[in-house]
Length: 195
Picture 1 (spheres, rainbow, N blue to C red):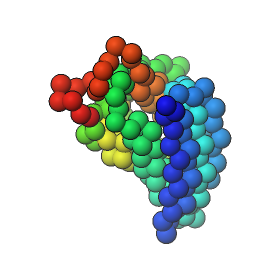
Picture 2 (tube, one colour):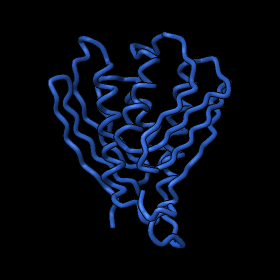
Picture 3 (cartoon, helix red, strand yellow):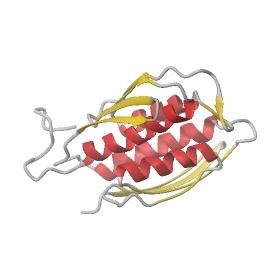
Picture 4 (cartoon, one colour):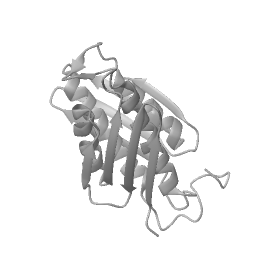
């Protein structure tokens, strides 16, 4: 069974079309009108080996907040939908990613319970035109809509671009691990019998 999802979401602030294949090869086609987010989503797809298409338009004349957050919402919904009942998945994934002077840990639990721990202390600066604080908004929206525990911990780092990039790469790799199927598992990885 292919683990895929395709979602269209339109609001008064954004229009998003997203297509996801969990068991992909890292191919991506990303056009969000937020160049730095495009870059991060390409990295996420490549390092998670997900096939990902995102086309988005938003009220970027105001700022990037709605577009970034809504893409996080839709990506979270897509993973939740593509994973279905989560039978046979490993459930947990962790990645520790270096990026030059930066080291970040990202851990995910596809538990069905949304929770974000974001120990990534960034200054209120821009990377290009992207407000660094929007990275947190993206991850919060994803966790809420995927229904996962998502922990991002910056061990150290100085360059804000490197820090956010390490987080997105770790996000991809940890989700790749958590979504892997293990033939030894019958049902879900929970003593409750449901995730």
